[in-house]
Length: 124
Image (cartoon, rainbow, N blue to C red; front, side, top):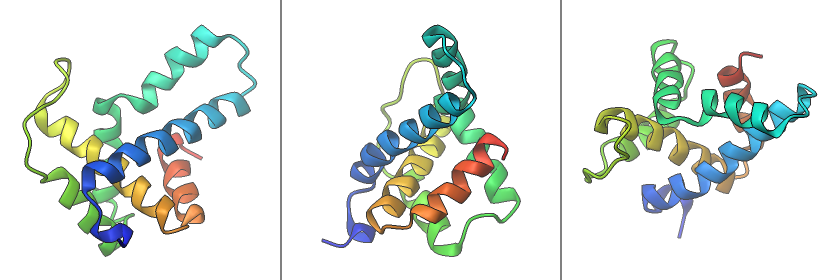
């Protein structure tokens, strides 16, 4: 099965892991030694609220390619109403869209594009 045809929630499942690794690697590059500090800083990047914010910013700036936007919206529009109690449904869906996009890019071997997106997210 081609990655473009995969269930978007499966792509998000993989994308979540890839995204988390990128964020942890970035935080370690800042020479932070305390695990509690690392965890607190990671929340700035991995919370659904902040992921949704990054997605909306990239959309407003037309940073994403058409195919990337299509995958993001396909995941965002996926039917389902389950979401964590601490965030609203639309915020959670945008975050899921970002994770699905990262998962898709990873399966396609587009690591340089993931790097570009992640640099945009962390402000590099």
